[in-house]
Length: 144
Image 1 (tube, rainbow, N blue to C red):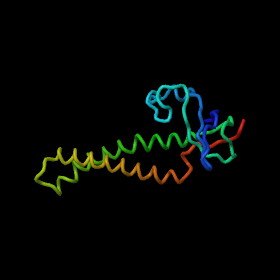
Image 2 (cartoon, rainbow, N blue to C red):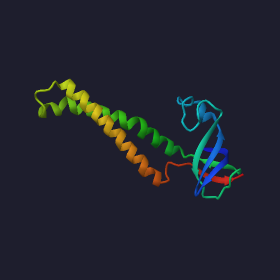
Image 3 (cartoon, rainbow, N blue to C red):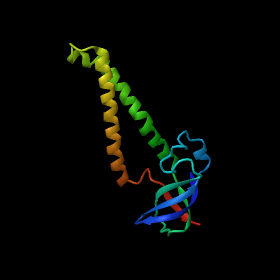
Image 4 (cartoon, rainbow, N blue to C red):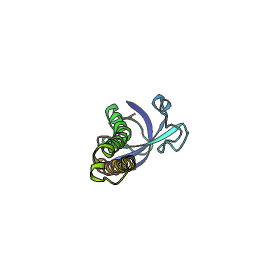
């Protein structure tokens, strides 16, 4: 998905681009609370890789791959939910054998919360590692 914007800051091989909200933003459920957008403004700030050497003030075309958006959505939404469900299921079926004196529902609830917390810790670690990688980051395609 290609978008247009203006470079407002350059930091090495990364740039910060001010872009107008588009139709993709309008359909997003989080548009009012988007952290990169600063609220309900009509503009968003996007940090992108700059392989073309854009300068501050340049009007650029940048791209966010649809695959990256889908992968990020699956990681951020599906992984924690599936981890919680796995924790509850294991807490209901497996863990009571090792903890016979405790109520299975209590063990199940605690296991679900523990697996959910572990999923968020994993995602935090993954986010630090993916900062080094470049697969999720938008890229500047060309200067207009």
